[in-house]
Length: 337
Image (cartoon, rainbow, N blue to C red; front, side):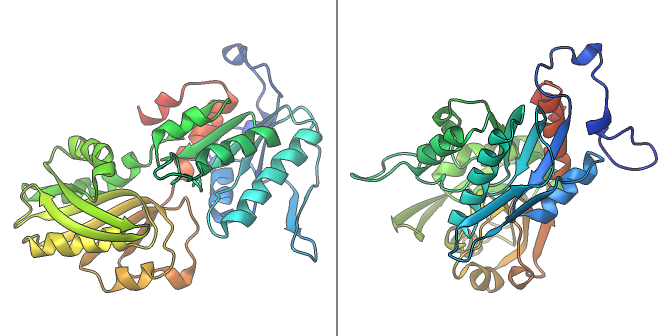
């Protein structure tokens, strides 16, 4: 439907609004813009939509302030600004906020912030006295900047959608991941949740793959430090798939993999939507018993962080379909039908 090629229709920006699209009340042309956080993904999304990225300059002044200039008219248009708020987090977040502000001041019809990886999401509640709730703060910043809608994938906590006073579409990366593992299925395959917080995510994957599930019960003495306690379920002689939404320092996933091996697991696979991979993550993964780590491209992974055991799947198809559905005011559920 949205692939470029001989069978592709006219670019979405050139389509005439038909009777089926009569509910559209916003601008009559779509435009895609990208910051610097994940340009390859933005370009892939544009190709799927048979269009190109808009003309925008995103740089810095000599003192380090972010500089943005939109080089074409956006008046009355439907804008989608593609930007993950990954490392360097503050720079990428400011780029996104300033791009949204520039678009609104240029009289864009509607601005959708497409945030494949939504940073600052891990502090979504007051876990201790005097903690901030940064997920709510960033939600307020995006709204104040002028975003009319947010399109993201696998929020760290689903309730973050409620922090916004604008519509939020939280796409699912799971279908991409478990589709990749379907060919490995046999009677010895088991899905493992690396912690209690990931149980719902792991259960959905286990149900889709029609296999049993185990849970790693862990204790985290402080941030980015994990101590495995015990494993709930039988993993002896099993091929295990660890399922998580993000891998940051890789402490959780690597210690979990070692615990599974200690309990008799034969092969360890791991998957995540967001490969943050900060600090010692790459070194830990390189020396871990994990056979293969499958991740999505919501965060651009530098070449120096890539390992032979890593497999990166593209999210361009899903985001392209979601952007088209937002533009045409169609339901997101059709993406997964």
